[in-house]
Length: 70
Image (cartoon, rainbow, N blue to C red; front, side, top):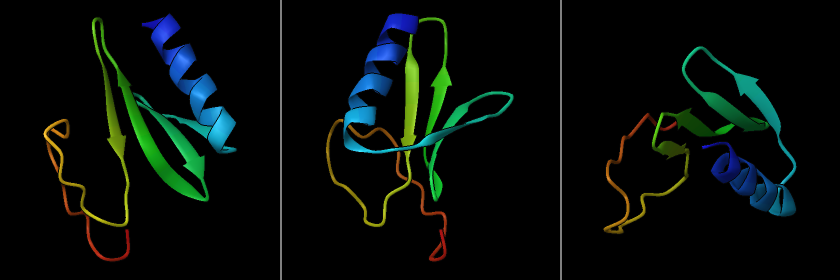
């Protein structure tokens, strides 16, 4: 998973400046607030985005509404 993680981070770095927030079970990417949570597993990387609007796509598995202020 390391090569995939490195490629993902390199592509995101081209678009946005961010810092890391390392938790027990995830790696958060921060630009003012945490905007992405990465959960690295043995054979997959689960990516959670924080967005201002709801996206409709068959590639999006779950959508959570975390409240107006988030």
